Length: 176
Image 1 (tube, one colour):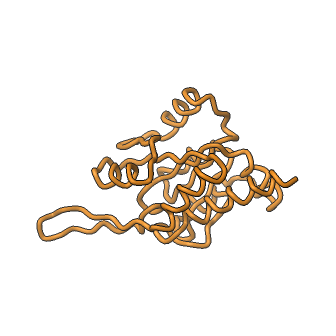
Image 2 (cartoon, one colour):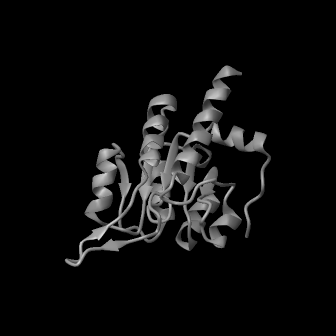
């Protein structure tokens, strides 16, 4: 089932309420590629621009970022540590259970949480949050659910696109 489509004004209003932006990793923070060396070490490509989006959310509008992913690798732990992301949930199959735990622990309403995902394992959490997005190259499943489809692809600034929309919405609300 597709999510209701909102006007830009309605999306800005929804974005202005966000206190926590949750994200998937593969296909959002990475380009969906997995790289292996001859020795078998896994590598992932992350966008520096997305990292700046995390920092800008925190510094400009006091929005926290969290990661919820099926993956459980030292690469993701290292990236989260570098970006000062403390809300880190690895090896998660049922993302909705973690969402409920976060909502309760942080005393947040569903309207105060945004999520960006790209594939079928993101659909149920995308249906629940106040605002959701997907990268331009996401699956059709995610695109049908997303409120916002970013200009950029996963691993190439999609997270940053969504972060900047939230930042701009919150800053414009302050001026009103």
